[in-house]
Image (tube, rainbow, N blue to C red):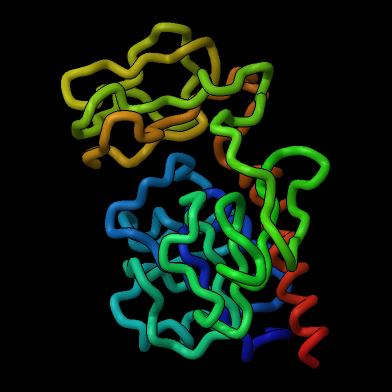
Length: 265
């Protein structure tokens, strides 16, 4: 492993965090992921966070394994396996890099002294104040760019268009309640078809398309929580490949890490 001494800890193992992990691991960095006990990941088929509920997952050749003890992190990571810890905070392990990939769109508890290099994804962070570098996550010509000063574009509140659809492609919980699905990720569905329920309220497909993501069955969510994603491109879309956005953002994080290493010698 080329950069074996530089452990990179990623907070959040969802779609974007997994893209970051893939880019860093492929470049020769040991990687670890911190995740919630009940991950809120929607694109579970391409997310390392799924190791929390499944024990072990492999995404595009990269294997992640749930561990109970921070003492297991270095051994696994050095062997090319991503240890996944259920930890809202940061594990007490020596690390060179921390990446905040939780997409909370605000700093939460991220601090520049969390590691020699702290990188954050998306809006809500100020490089030089909350972290050392920020990577743009908004689709467009700047997606994946690294900022060492200032902020990314502000949160628009509207998902980027896919197949001509924006906000309506995202499924949100109509009420507080427990999620239960009738359909699965990768299924082709028709407009109005019942996909499942939150509490006693049905969640239906907004249009014909492919189910690209669904939050974990049995999780309790608040009204308005993102619980799924339908892709209007239908069978031409892929529910089982890491997105171009995740890889672009991951490439930005890799650039930030390599730039930091070059600057620090």
